[in-house]
Image (cartoon, rainbow, N blue to C red):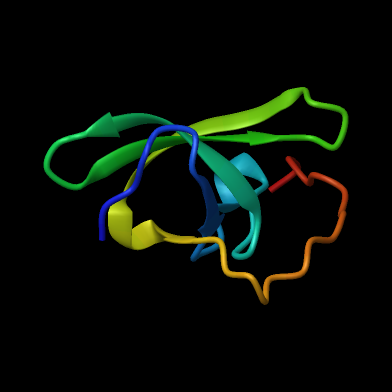
Length: 77
């Protein structure tokens, strides 16, 4: 699957060390050939919570049926 810069994506797995959970919404901020990308996750008020490099299989595109929600960021893990 190919992604584009500034495309919204959904995390496919928990990333405990960053306080991220499967289903969290991020934005592609850099592409690495052949199958890597860097994704930024932000808090509700726009502060960067994490910037993480993934393989494309770790995220998926946003679907029209996805529902957004809000949860506290847990960095204690």
